[in-house]
Image (cartoon, rainbow over all chains, first blue to last red; front, side, top):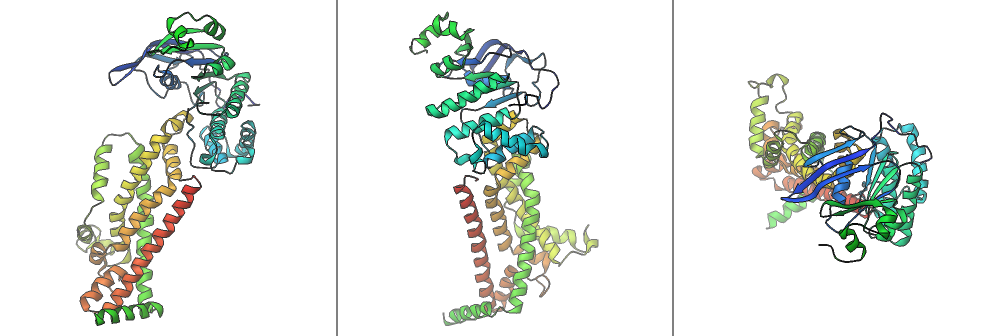
Length: 246
Length: 235
């Protein structure tokens, strides 16, 4: 993270624009006419009740799922380009290899020459406080350690946009604090972070803007302070009041 | 019953004395079988992985075909290969009939579909788990296949083991294309068939004991390796 030069600097992805995006499955519209523009800078939290379409929206932004209708563009282009967007999943997907080998695989995929990889791996291990675990099989790590590894692996690409899908779900407070520290450090280095979370306190700690989804639609998109202090939409008011949103 | 016991006694005496004829047959069996499984792995592992990961026209047909070929009757393979390699066949000029090479080719034909089909299943399951990660990382199709094969390596031992089992036990195809010629193409299975028909139960039983022991040792070794890998969370 100290060296913020990107691996492949050709054009930018900003703004990331979703225009009238729909997605349906089994005749149910899961994303319904979402229009959203992501700009570099503030940490964006995507919030909403279960089934609102948060994780799906994140995958559409990442380019993993193509919308049924509407358009997603990255700096005017239809594709974001390699290594520009990184995604960390709620349950980290780690290769059946050691911690260091997981990072080596990612760096190799990103096109980092072999001679540079050893140094980069050491930096990433230090960033994730995983130095003593380098030789351990990744899948025997604790949940917090696995998620830290997934985070630094994502940051290894030096992405412009880091998408996090409930990265702290089922983590203890200490592990959550470590992940949030990584999020802040990435944001401070200029990486745009968009985070799905259920945790309102976490959203208050991290977010500068909130996108609130309900039934696949954006019910509210507002600065974090305004959203928490004076939500405008009835859905957000009900959600923040702890009422069940059906 | 007494004859049976005597045959067993003679069989163990042959094994313990490291009979030269017996060792020659065992050596050829291992050479043919291991060569065939190695070649079948080189073909079957990537083929299975491509069928699991690839999205191309005819993929379903190819998958059905590979699965169907798992049950290829060895004697039919032997007959087909015999026709290809015989003097009048298209490959007769190679003069491979009644050689260990012909036996290896026959076993490769029998074993490759087994390894490919089992590999496809293993890789498809792992691909379901890794797919989004590899796409987010921007992994190429070839890189995806390589990553999946490497990470499934301990699970794929089962596929190799199934292929080895088939090759070790196979008799129908190798007896047709090998001819069961003494000191040239006589393997454990073909020797067992011959010696039993001649009534020499001692050698047949001795070879049978060795064949089963080899199967058990190889299986135990591979399963032990896989269990160790699972404990280490690499499997």
